[in-house]
Image 1 (cartoon, rainbow, N blue to C red):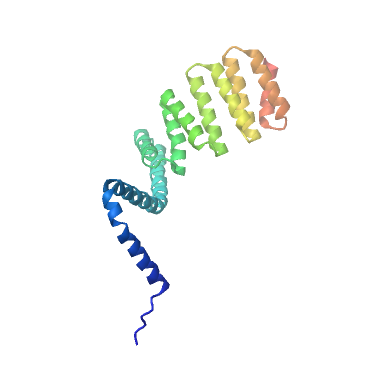
Image 2 (cartoon, rainbow, N blue to C red):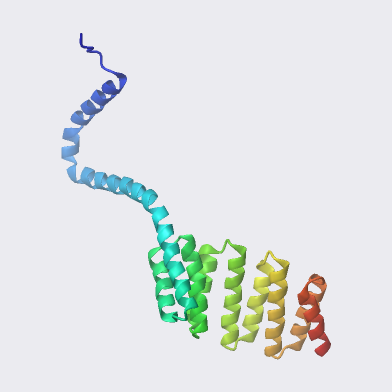
Length: 220
C-alpha cells in the first residue's frame, strides 16, 4: 500500500510553491523592479561561486607567470621579464604573486632608470601589501634609492631613516642607517652624517654595522 503521507521536505516544497504562486500577481505588477533585483541576486550568487572556484586557480597561474618572469630576468631577457611582471599585476591583483611582482617590476624599472615608475610601484606595495616586513623594508629602501638616483640626497637619507625606524630587524635597521649616513655625506651635511653614525655605534654596538660606523667616524 502506497504511503500517501508527505515528508517534511515535501511539505516545505509545497508551501514554497504556494508562496510563489500567490506572489505572481504582485511580481507582474512590478516586473521591471523584480527582474532587476533577480538578476542582481543571480549575479551575486554566481559571483561568489565563481570567486571560490577560481581563486586557487588564479594563485597558481599568477605564481607560474611570475616564475616565468624571474627566469626571463635571469636569462637577461629584461623586456620579457617586465611584460610578464606587468601581466601578473594586471590580471592577478591581490594575489601573493602580485605583491611580489610589484617589487620585482619596481626593481626592474629602477635598473632601467625609470625612477618615477619604480617609485610609484614601491609606494603601491607599501599601500596595498606592506604587511611582510622584509618586503616592506625592500620597498622603503627602494624609495630611498630612487631619491638618491635623482640627486635628492637629503630625501634619500630621510627615506633610509624611515626604513630603519619601520624595520623589525636590527640588522636591517643598522644597514638602513648606514645608507642614511652615506646620503647625508653626499648632501654635504657631515654633522647629520656623524649623528647617524654615532647612533649606529650606540644602538647597534654588537653588529658589523657598528664597526663600520666607527671606521667612518674616525675618518670624519
